[in-house]
Figure 1 (cartoon, rainbow, N blue to C red):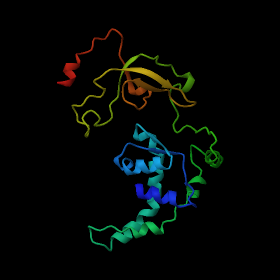
Figure 2: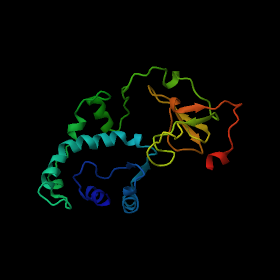
Figure 3: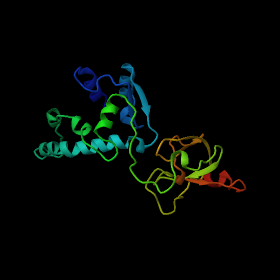
Figure 4: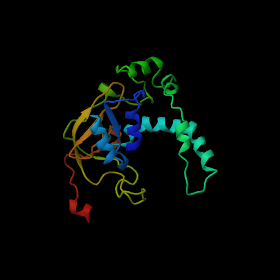
Length: 219
């Protein structure tokens, strides 16, 4: 990964030359040498706390691979199974205008032009909400005790089992929230997981609830 980033910075004609921010997940490929290289170019590194935050970039990569993968397959068919060709990468022509000039359901051409000029745009709704959102949504006050909905395999770091809990065994306190136009309110915990939650992912704990001892959850 560091070698590919180095190629971008060494190419003065590259569109993405000298970016100010670099948004990545917490994968190991972005650590060590890659991190040192970005800091050397005074690039701000922003780590996302959830794979959902990089979903747009991953979708862009998926669409690009549909056009580029057949070159890779054609080269590999003529090589032994243990070898992989890298010559196909040199023939790729990455044309971002294909994506920038393609209307989508959420943003249109004019919105893309504004985004490229660092202007604020309002994204259309991807789904129609069946409940009030943004400033019309009932707000859960701070210091509300809740449990959050576990992702598959989150409890033990592997695939979800039938005996796994649906809600987190530990109770957390809402520390802050984020309100955006046409979007559900996002809640952040005080001393808890770093990613944000919507209301449907939270289970409110009544004040008079007597919770089991933490010793039971740990043993």
